[in-house]
Length: 249
Image 1 (tube, one colour):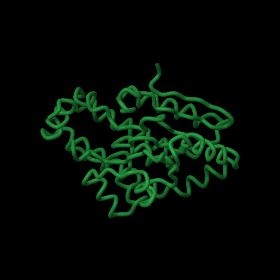
Image 2 (cartoon, rainbow, N blue to C red):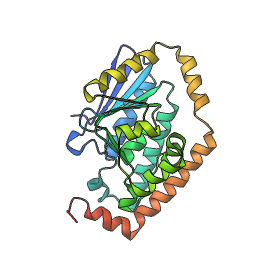
Image 3 (cartoon, rainbow, N blue to C red):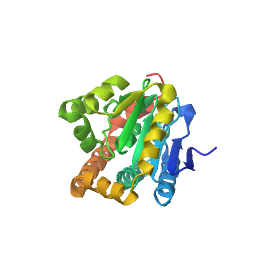
Image 4 (cartoon, rainbow, N blue to C red):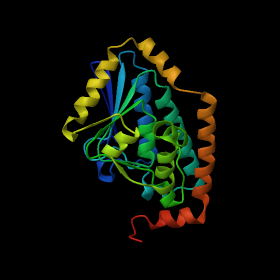
């Protein structure tokens, strides 16, 4: 079974993360499949909008920590590089990308949602940046995007303390723009995607470029984040904490 599913219908591409047994936590092969699906969608002239979803149970719980325990420093840094390229690809897609979020969006999963243009949450969605628990740091543009979306105060609470927020709090602080009943999430996201797909694609792409902000600032954020998270992964603290994942300690 593919771990990333791509479906295209009536001008809307739906990319679904499909590792439900681990709440869509990603390993490196899954990241590569996600990037391939995104490239297929963005390069298709028939696609006017993209919905990124994880299905009903979870959007994405970030990196699969059982997999991370086995990575060498070089493998981890290669995975971070691919994640950053994926983040940039999401941000620079000519079509609007809508994240439809049910269940947890944690760590790298929240970062993927931040890289989308619009975030819609089911009422059961939860959000967190738990990286400091594992002696790691946020990445994939989150250090820049969190502050833009929720302001300095909430960005610091989320990133430093790992506070978990529910959907209504996420709506109140600007992390998402809509909260809907879980049963209505898919239709709401696709209704917005169809609305976007009916617009002039050149105007939409140009507007996305205008909203993107300074490219140098984005690149600087990615470089600083990559250095910080690589240093964290190399630390004895991170190795010890990752080794404890799943052990009950």
